[in-house]
Image (cartoon, rainbow, N blue to C red; front, side):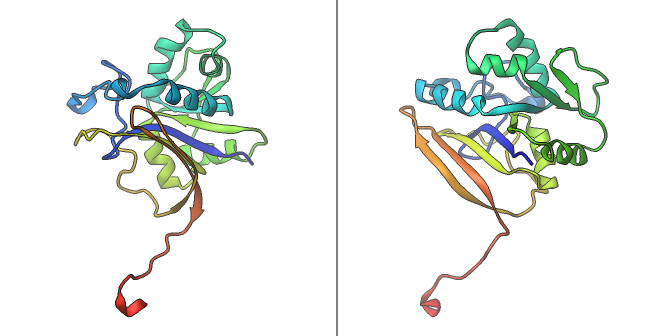
Length: 206
């Protein structure tokens, strides 16, 4: 069994759409593409590289696959992120694609939840999801995510695709690591803990 790990950039209000630049994902009339760029710094780059290094395979949604394929084959280097995205296996979840051109990519077949569970049941290292807002919603509904790695930026957008949408199964998460960057972003890792527990706070409970 291997873990399914989601890594993404989010704003304070949970938006994860098009953090990297213009043309990345303007769907829905989104007008703030590239919102993370003013906050990117060396500490953040080092953390992202560390996270990427642990991947055995990647699981991507259609939009993120298209973005990665359009750029990373043109940026082959010794950098662990470039090495990982260019040469490790990439499974692509899409309802519209019938084939993929990237030689290290493969389309998921059949139901996404069932296909992901089969991948998780294999021996090996991390199966990592990056970006892929729509796919993450499916994975949350299917309750197959083992770890969330988030970089939370000090900005509020008020619009755009969010990390948690309708249909996410209630779950609790345990903080695994945390760090801040000079630009004010918070880098955290949460591991799945279990069911949601509730209680009461007040004088009658003292």
